[in-house]
Image (tube, rainbow, N blue to C red; front, top):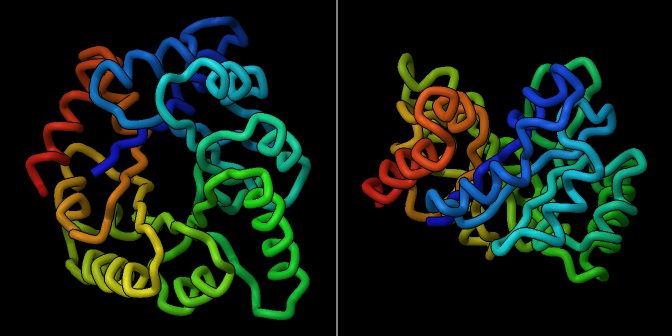
Length: 241
């Protein structure tokens, strides 16, 4: 299973003082040394953490793949097309949210939103960029993702992360969604709210081949360093397979 580490919150610390440290690129290198298979960053329209220069440096510097998260709307598409990261994950984005609150709205077929999404997917595909859609573990959304012709989806694990200690139903939905997606020929990724205490059940889902984890690893790195924090997460994931 691939582990992509999201280094957004390394930039969050930097932007708190509007200075030049800590450096997300330096953190990304340490994550790779710790066992990460790739790096994820979310370039938001409000640039609250990761900045354009961070993405540019990562795209040209990294020895392993870069997964660029971005909204389908707004002016971010030209940046992705220019830098051509290994993968672009299309995510929802609302200016006032603290973090991503749910999966991407794929729109009803024939709607303006659906048409816009199809256009963005087509332009990314033409540029040779692998595409993933960040969606809720919902059967309709999975069917629509397959119809849109993307190679991969990332299942939003937020509901599971918030309820795993009280209920098993969210994990069951993830398991069913992963099975459905794989049957439709989609690669299955997962992420959001995964921590050292809840990751193993998701890592154990056979169809899931990639996890995106950020906040928990960056939080732990304050205490043990980011290279060790990634090693700790890598060990938990590998022991689940």
